[in-house]
Amino acid sequence: MDPLAASLALNQRFPNEDPSFMEVIIESTPLAGSETGARIVEKLVRAKPEAVLGLATGSTPLGLYRELIRRHREGGLDFGAVTTFNLDEYVGLDPRHPASYHRFMQENLFDHVNIRPDHIHLPDGMTADIPAYCAGYEAAIRAAGGIGLQVLGIGHDGHIGFNEPGSSLGSRTRLKTLTAETIEANRRFFSDAGEVPHHVITMGVGTILESRVCLLLAFGEAKAEAVAGMVEGPVTAMCPASVLQLHPQTVLIVDEAAASRLRRADYYRYVYANKPEFQRDASFPVR
Ligand code: F6R
Image 1: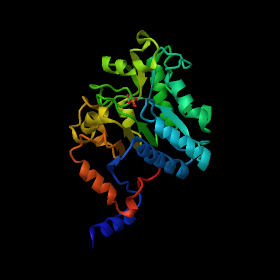
Image 2 (image 1 turned 60 degrees about the horizontal axis):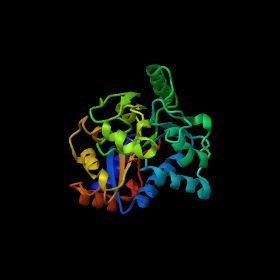
Image 3 (image 1 turned 30 degrees about the horizontal axis):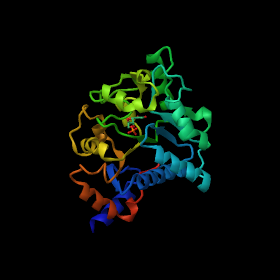
Image 4 (image 1 turned 180 degrees about the horizontal axis):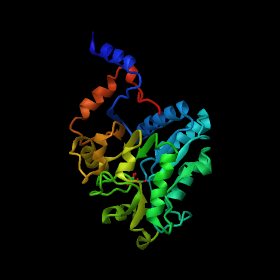
């Protein structure tokens, strides 16, 4: 029997067995990458309207959110039963502050789709009791049934969420101190450099790893080294994203520039171009 037919036969024998993979999708531009990402999110939301989505902020997912808004407006993509949990928020920043992640999400997604306000969760950077609050955030994720698909970006240093290099790979939602590099990178969102908070509440690496699917987007040359570390480097706390090598269902979408330091880029392109039909379009089971 040829190997594909054998694999199909196996899938039919064990229909509940989930395939495990890290899929690397190299698209020509950030726009094409954002569209592919949106297609994966749409597939989940259409198959499971009450899906739980983990969301990220920053410049990377902006195109993805624009594309989801378009699909909502033009294609009737319905977020009415979706629940969301964001990765992180600055400590000490009022949710109405223009640089807060609350505002970012309102302006770039929530104001434009029909996600119910009571289904939206973002860490509260103003909480008086951070440890208790973080434990409650974890409990809320569990109570919602866990995160079905977590959208991620990646920092230049390989951080995911705000889990900076050196973060415990088993960490949970907690307070983190930002590195000088991350503070510098985020300065552009604040009118005054002195205003950039030094602390955040972030989901932990362990929290992210429990998401059933991780969808990480990375665009531009500046992300190339972090992407290479994530996919082809050793699994190390020095590049927190590298732990996704241990995650069973991660989809990485990069543009050519972000893929430029991947040693096996040609192989990933070949695999993607020659996928058997049954594996096409993120064949992961919808849960
Ligand atoms: C934001 C987050 C961060 C960013 C990362 C990349 O919620 O979790 O990990 O994804 O810092 O930021 P951008 O996309 O602005 O390059």
